[in-house]
Length: 132
Image 1 (tube, rainbow, N blue to C red):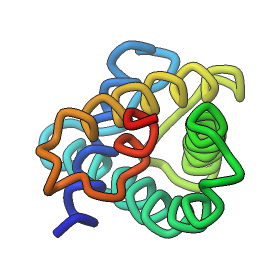
Image 2: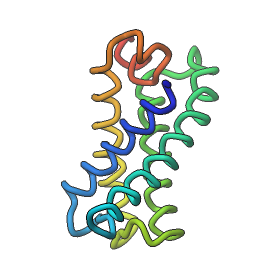
Image 3: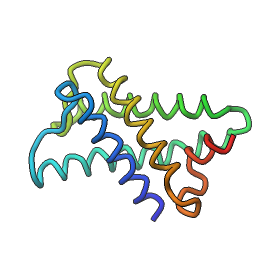
Image 4: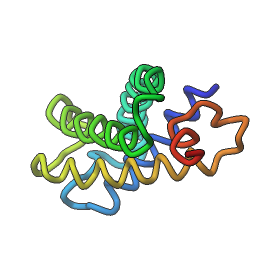
């Protein structure tokens, strides 16, 4: 269930990034096609964050929360850029826009994770960052 929550939260984060940076970052499609595009991108983000961040957390004593936030940001930027190059579901007008979108998606995702009840966010990167 936690993976599903992470996928939904990441989907919201990327969608908000696309809304804020529109037309520089935008999903392609409308209606059901738009929903499927958001779900696909959220699935990639959610799975990448689910499997990459536990590795980062395993060395959490060596890194502080800014480092975790920076790594999460870098991962989100690379994912945005890669998805825009590898699919028809998301378009970016350059790598710099992936930086803007990554910053927005990371901020929204961390804020939403922090807003979740503690039982739902146990072990999440947001909890790690906010508890320090």
